[in-house]
Amino acid sequence: MDALRSLVAILHLDGLARAAERIGRSPSAISQQMRKLESQLGQPLFRKQGRRVVLTEAGDRIHAYARRILELNDEAVHAVRGAAIDGTVRFGLPGDFAESWLPAALGQFRKAYPAVRVDVLVERNGLLLERLDRGELDLVLALNQGARADAERLATLPMTWIGPAGTDEVVRPAAVLDLALYQPPCFFRQAGTAALDRAGIAWRPAFVTASLHSLWAGVAAGLGVTVRTGADLPPSLMRLDEHHGLPSLPGVDLCLHTAPGPPSAALTHLRQAVMEQAQTHLGKKDQAKKG
Image 1: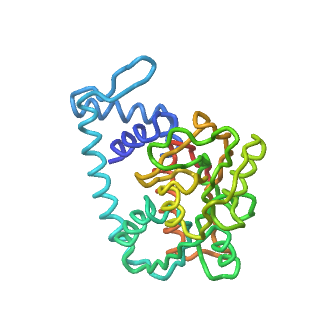
Image 2: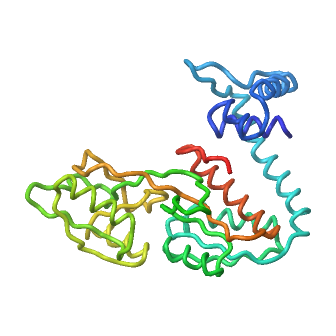
Image 3: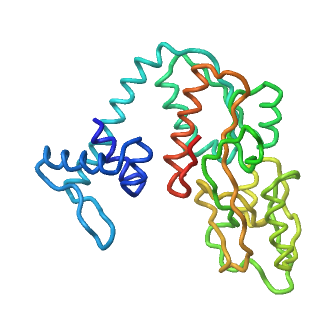
């Protein structure tokens, strides 16, 4: 089981050194595990491809089985351990992740810890942290709040311009650029308009909303381009860049914030689950810093 876990980590993290760091073993120990696994299977699992090491056909097949075996193993362990953990955790997250990988992660957590009740609030970043500070939330996932003392950075995501799918030309000479924006205060709005001002591109707030759903709808309808992270975009939208005449944008930190005081067992396990899922889905863009 340990060898299969190492194999999956090597493939997911695209390298033996990163896998060794994640698992807490030395690279030589991981290499020995892979040699032993190859000996047990009677076939090589890796082959050279230029400077990279990739899976053989046998390696690809055992990798697929390894993921299924580990998922079943972990589910069985969590089912037994999780039954002894109960309580309530109040979790806040922004709309950017409310329809992507995070709900599925919360569903997996619910199966593993059936006695834990998770109350979820989807709201704007600033409002989530205000409620955390008032003691109304226990755990918050938020963007661009890395300056807070309680921030634990999970990843840095690139901001990107977003427009309707099939967009070709965006910035036209002597024309004012229509923007679809959140109501202020909004750091995406600030970053986008500041970048346009520096580039000397005239703009106007053509579509303003407080809802991510309506923001996406406005952009898809051609009412204006917007700025977000580009994470899990609807198929009706596309990322835009300098080729469309738009200026570059900074990155934004994705951070986890925990309420002060000793955490309950339920909160500790939910926090760990969110961190692991964030690293799984976002780690290839930016490996999370260790807490």
